[in-house]
Figure (tube, rainbow, N blue to C red):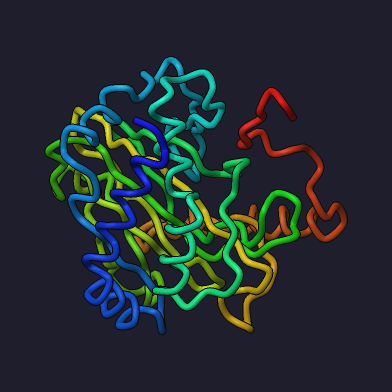
Length: 273
Protein backbone atom coordinates (compact mmCIF):
# COMPACT_ATOMS: atom_id res chain seq x y z
CA UNK A 1 0.00 0.00 0.00
CA UNK A 2 1.19 3.47 -0.88
CA UNK A 3 0.41 6.67 0.97
CA UNK A 4 -1.90 7.92 -1.80
CA UNK A 5 -4.02 4.78 -1.48
CA UNK A 6 -4.25 5.30 2.26
CA UNK A 7 -4.97 9.00 1.78
CA UNK A 8 -7.73 8.34 -0.77
CA UNK A 9 -9.59 6.18 1.72
CA UNK A 10 -9.04 8.55 4.64
CA UNK A 11 -10.37 11.50 2.64
CA UNK A 12 -13.42 9.47 1.61
CA UNK A 13 -14.11 8.38 5.21
CA UNK A 14 -13.82 11.90 6.62
CA UNK A 15 -15.97 13.35 3.84
CA UNK A 16 -18.65 10.75 4.52
CA UNK A 17 -18.73 11.70 8.19
CA UNK A 18 -17.92 15.39 7.85
CA UNK A 19 -21.19 16.69 9.26
CA UNK A 20 -21.06 14.62 12.46
CA UNK A 21 -17.32 15.25 12.85
CA UNK A 22 -17.90 18.99 12.57
CA UNK A 23 -20.65 18.83 15.18
CA UNK A 24 -18.45 16.85 17.54
CA UNK A 25 -15.59 19.32 17.21
CA UNK A 26 -17.79 22.40 17.50
CA UNK A 27 -19.39 21.09 20.70
CA UNK A 28 -15.97 20.71 22.32
CA UNK A 29 -13.88 23.51 20.79
CA UNK A 30 -14.57 26.08 23.53
CA UNK A 31 -12.56 23.91 25.94
CA UNK A 32 -10.45 21.31 24.16
CA UNK A 33 -11.68 20.67 20.64
CA UNK A 34 -11.61 17.05 19.53
CA UNK A 35 -13.29 14.47 17.33
CA UNK A 36 -12.77 10.89 16.32
CA UNK A 37 -13.53 8.70 13.31
CA UNK A 38 -14.00 4.95 13.68
CA UNK A 39 -13.21 2.26 11.10
CA UNK A 40 -10.94 4.69 9.29
CA UNK A 41 -9.44 2.10 6.92
CA UNK A 42 -10.48 -1.34 5.68
CA UNK A 43 -9.87 -3.72 8.58
CA UNK A 44 -7.28 -5.79 6.73
CA UNK A 45 -5.15 -2.70 6.10
CA UNK A 46 -5.33 -1.61 9.72
CA UNK A 47 -4.37 -5.17 10.73
CA UNK A 48 -1.31 -5.04 8.48
CA UNK A 49 -0.18 -1.79 10.11
CA UNK A 50 -0.51 -3.40 13.52
CA UNK A 51 1.36 -6.53 12.41
CA UNK A 52 4.26 -4.52 10.94
CA UNK A 53 4.74 -2.39 14.07
CA UNK A 54 8.29 -2.73 15.42
CA UNK A 55 8.84 -4.75 18.56
CA UNK A 56 9.85 -2.87 21.70
CA UNK A 57 13.53 -3.83 21.30
CA UNK A 58 13.52 -1.93 17.98
CA UNK A 59 12.04 1.21 19.55
CA UNK A 60 13.32 3.84 22.01
CA UNK A 61 12.11 3.63 25.60
CA UNK A 62 11.24 6.98 27.17
CA UNK A 63 10.86 6.41 30.89
CA UNK A 64 10.68 9.01 33.65
CA UNK A 65 8.25 10.43 36.18
CA UNK A 66 6.53 12.09 33.23
CA UNK A 67 6.07 9.17 30.87
CA UNK A 68 6.76 5.53 30.19
CA UNK A 69 6.41 4.53 26.54
CA UNK A 70 8.22 3.28 23.46
CA UNK A 71 8.64 5.53 20.43
CA UNK A 72 10.00 5.21 16.90
CA UNK A 73 10.63 8.04 14.46
CA UNK A 74 13.49 6.91 12.17
CA UNK A 75 11.01 5.43 9.75
CA UNK A 76 13.47 4.07 7.17
CA UNK A 77 14.47 1.45 9.75
CA UNK A 78 11.01 -0.14 9.75
CA UNK A 79 8.56 -1.78 7.38
CA UNK A 80 7.63 0.64 4.55
CA UNK A 81 3.90 0.44 5.30
CA UNK A 82 4.51 2.38 8.53
CA UNK A 83 6.09 5.33 6.76
CA UNK A 84 3.35 5.25 4.14
CA UNK A 85 0.52 5.48 6.67
CA UNK A 86 2.24 8.23 8.64
CA UNK A 87 2.75 10.39 5.59
CA UNK A 88 -0.72 9.61 4.24
CA UNK A 89 -2.00 11.89 7.01
CA UNK A 90 0.18 14.63 5.54
CA UNK A 91 -1.57 14.49 2.16
CA UNK A 92 -2.67 18.04 1.37
CA UNK A 93 -6.29 16.96 0.89
CA UNK A 94 -6.43 15.53 4.40
CA UNK A 95 -4.58 18.44 5.98
CA UNK A 96 -6.90 20.96 4.35
CA UNK A 97 -10.04 18.96 5.13
CA UNK A 98 -9.26 18.56 8.82
CA UNK A 99 -8.14 22.18 9.04
CA UNK A 100 -11.45 23.26 7.52
CA UNK A 101 -13.38 21.23 10.10
CA UNK A 102 -11.31 22.72 12.93
CA UNK A 103 -11.27 26.25 11.45
CA UNK A 104 -7.48 26.44 11.23
CA UNK A 105 -5.75 28.83 8.86
CA UNK A 106 -2.63 27.92 6.89
CA UNK A 107 -2.11 24.39 8.22
CA UNK A 108 1.22 22.62 7.73
CA UNK A 109 2.04 18.94 8.24
CA UNK A 110 5.44 18.10 9.70
CA UNK A 111 7.66 15.96 7.46
CA UNK A 112 10.31 15.80 10.21
CA UNK A 113 7.82 14.04 12.52
CA UNK A 114 8.89 16.23 15.45
CA UNK A 115 7.45 14.36 18.47
CA UNK A 116 5.34 12.29 16.05
CA UNK A 117 5.86 8.88 14.45
CA UNK A 118 5.06 5.64 16.26
CA UNK A 119 4.35 5.03 19.92
CA UNK A 120 3.61 1.88 21.88
CA UNK A 121 2.68 1.24 25.51
CA UNK A 122 2.60 -2.03 27.41
CA UNK A 123 1.36 -2.96 30.86
CA UNK A 124 1.80 -0.21 33.49
CA UNK A 125 3.14 2.30 30.97
CA UNK A 126 1.56 5.77 30.93
CA UNK A 127 1.74 9.42 29.92
CA UNK A 128 1.12 12.02 32.63
CA UNK A 129 -1.28 14.96 32.07
CA UNK A 130 0.55 17.55 30.00
CA UNK A 131 0.47 20.35 27.47
CA UNK A 132 2.33 19.64 24.24
CA UNK A 133 5.19 21.93 23.29
CA UNK A 134 3.56 24.97 21.68
CA UNK A 135 5.87 25.11 18.65
CA UNK A 136 7.77 23.10 16.07
CA UNK A 137 11.44 22.18 16.48
CA UNK A 138 12.64 25.47 14.96
CA UNK A 139 10.16 27.48 17.05
CA UNK A 140 8.77 29.06 13.90
CA UNK A 141 5.29 27.51 13.70
CA UNK A 142 2.55 26.91 16.26
CA UNK A 143 1.42 23.37 17.01
CA UNK A 144 -2.35 23.31 16.47
CA UNK A 145 -3.56 19.73 16.02
CA UNK A 146 -2.62 16.29 17.32
CA UNK A 147 -3.64 13.29 15.17
CA UNK A 148 -3.61 9.83 16.77
CA UNK A 149 -4.43 6.69 14.80
CA UNK A 150 -4.82 3.52 16.91
CA UNK A 151 -4.13 0.06 15.51
CA UNK A 152 -4.32 -2.45 18.39
CA UNK A 153 -7.04 -5.02 17.54
CA UNK A 154 -9.72 -5.59 20.15
CA UNK A 155 -8.59 -2.78 22.44
CA UNK A 156 -11.13 -2.18 25.22
CA UNK A 157 -11.63 0.78 27.54
CA UNK A 158 -10.79 -1.25 30.64
CA UNK A 159 -7.38 -2.09 29.14
CA UNK A 160 -6.25 1.47 29.95
CA UNK A 161 -3.84 3.20 27.58
CA UNK A 162 -6.63 5.55 26.52
CA UNK A 163 -6.43 9.20 25.58
CA UNK A 164 -7.73 11.48 28.33
CA UNK A 165 -8.57 15.15 27.81
CA UNK A 166 -9.02 17.45 30.81
CA UNK A 167 -11.24 20.33 29.58
CA UNK A 168 -12.07 21.41 33.15
CA UNK A 169 -8.60 21.01 34.63
CA UNK A 170 -7.18 18.47 37.03
CA UNK A 171 -9.78 19.12 39.72
CA UNK A 172 -12.42 17.49 37.53
CA UNK A 173 -12.68 14.13 35.80
CA UNK A 174 -11.20 13.81 32.32
CA UNK A 175 -13.03 12.76 29.18
CA UNK A 176 -11.80 9.36 28.01
CA UNK A 177 -11.35 8.67 24.30
CA UNK A 178 -10.76 4.93 24.01
CA UNK A 179 -7.77 3.82 21.91
CA UNK A 180 -10.15 1.71 19.83
CA UNK A 181 -8.73 -0.30 16.91
CA UNK A 182 -8.82 1.58 13.60
CA UNK A 183 -9.87 4.85 15.25
CA UNK A 184 -8.46 8.27 14.35
CA UNK A 185 -8.63 10.79 17.18
CA UNK A 186 -7.90 14.46 16.50
CA UNK A 187 -7.32 16.97 19.30
CA UNK A 188 -6.66 20.70 19.29
CA UNK A 189 -3.44 21.85 20.95
CA UNK A 190 -3.27 25.19 22.72
CA UNK A 191 -2.49 26.63 26.16
CA UNK A 192 -5.38 24.76 27.79
CA UNK A 193 -5.34 21.41 25.96
CA UNK A 194 -4.28 19.29 28.93
CA UNK A 195 -4.28 15.60 28.04
CA UNK A 196 -2.79 12.28 29.11
CA UNK A 197 -2.75 8.54 28.47
CA UNK A 198 -4.10 6.36 31.27
CA UNK A 199 -1.86 3.58 32.62
CA UNK A 200 -2.12 0.36 30.61
CA UNK A 201 -3.68 -2.49 32.61
CA UNK A 202 -3.59 -5.08 29.83
CA UNK A 203 -0.85 -7.53 28.89
CA UNK A 204 -0.90 -6.44 25.25
CA UNK A 205 0.40 -3.28 23.57
CA UNK A 206 -1.47 -0.12 22.68
CA UNK A 207 -0.05 0.99 19.31
CA UNK A 208 -0.46 4.44 17.82
CA UNK A 209 0.54 6.32 14.65
CA UNK A 210 0.82 10.03 15.39
CA UNK A 211 1.13 13.29 13.48
CA UNK A 212 1.01 16.97 14.36
CA UNK A 213 -0.19 19.86 12.25
CA UNK A 214 1.26 23.35 12.63
CA UNK A 215 0.28 26.87 11.59
CA UNK A 216 1.78 30.33 11.35
CA UNK A 217 -0.89 31.46 13.80
CA UNK A 218 -1.76 29.99 17.21
CA UNK A 219 -5.11 28.31 17.62
CA UNK A 220 -6.08 30.99 20.15
CA UNK A 221 -4.89 34.56 20.27
CA UNK A 222 -4.16 34.14 23.98
CA UNK A 223 -1.74 31.25 23.40
CA UNK A 224 1.89 31.73 24.40
CA UNK A 225 5.12 29.80 24.01
CA UNK A 226 5.62 26.89 26.40
CA UNK A 227 7.70 23.73 26.61
CA UNK A 228 6.00 20.37 27.04
CA UNK A 229 4.57 20.85 30.52
CA UNK A 230 3.69 17.87 32.71
CA UNK A 231 1.46 17.63 35.76
CA UNK A 232 0.61 15.03 38.35
CA UNK A 233 -2.78 13.38 38.43
CA UNK A 234 -5.29 14.65 41.03
CA UNK A 235 -4.11 12.09 43.60
CA UNK A 236 -0.41 12.79 42.96
CA UNK A 237 0.09 16.01 44.93
CA UNK A 238 3.82 15.68 45.58
CA UNK A 239 4.58 14.52 42.04
CA UNK A 240 2.57 17.45 40.72
CA UNK A 241 4.75 19.90 42.66
CA UNK A 242 7.93 18.21 41.40
CA UNK A 243 6.76 18.34 37.79
CA UNK A 244 5.74 21.99 38.03
CA UNK A 245 9.22 22.88 39.28
CA UNK A 246 10.70 20.91 36.37
CA UNK A 247 8.42 22.77 33.92
CA UNK A 248 9.57 26.12 35.32
CA UNK A 249 13.25 25.19 35.08
CA UNK A 250 12.94 24.07 31.47
CA UNK A 251 11.02 27.21 30.58
CA UNK A 252 13.80 29.25 32.13
CA UNK A 253 16.34 27.50 29.95
CA UNK A 254 14.31 28.18 26.82
CA UNK A 255 14.11 31.88 27.63
CA UNK A 256 17.90 31.96 27.36
CA UNK A 257 18.40 29.33 24.65
CA UNK A 258 15.53 29.74 22.21
CA UNK A 259 15.90 26.28 20.66
CA UNK A 260 17.11 24.54 23.78
CA UNK A 261 20.57 23.40 24.84
CA UNK A 262 20.58 20.11 22.94
CA UNK A 263 18.82 19.05 19.75
CA UNK A 264 15.65 17.08 20.33
CA UNK A 265 16.39 13.57 18.97
CA UNK A 266 12.70 12.91 18.27
CA UNK A 267 12.99 13.94 14.61
CA UNK A 268 13.10 11.83 11.46
CA UNK A 269 16.56 12.37 9.98
CA UNK A 270 16.24 11.44 6.33
CA UNK A 271 19.26 10.39 4.28
CA UNK A 272 18.95 13.25 1.80
CA UNK A 273 19.12 15.71 4.70
